[in-house]
Image 1 (cartoon, rainbow, N blue to C red):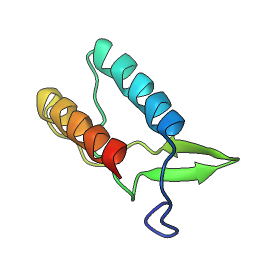
Image 2 (cartoon, rainbow, N blue to C red):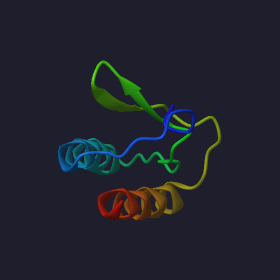
Image 3 (cartoon, helix red, strand yellow):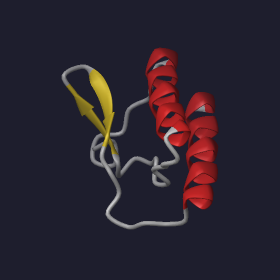
Image 4 (cartoon, helix red, strand yellow):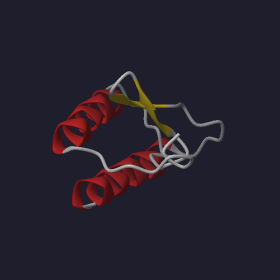
Length: 74
């Protein structure tokens, strides 16, 4: 995970992650925990592990959007 081996994400990686989360939101789902503990580097690409804990969908969507904003700045 990025928690174990921190690294920056390219703008393309952030864009693909944003697309994936937008698709999840369009299907009325959300992740809610987009952070270093749930982001993994695998075969040259970033992947997102599903969280073990749950929160309300609207709260999780807002958390997803905030995380994407932070990742885009970093």
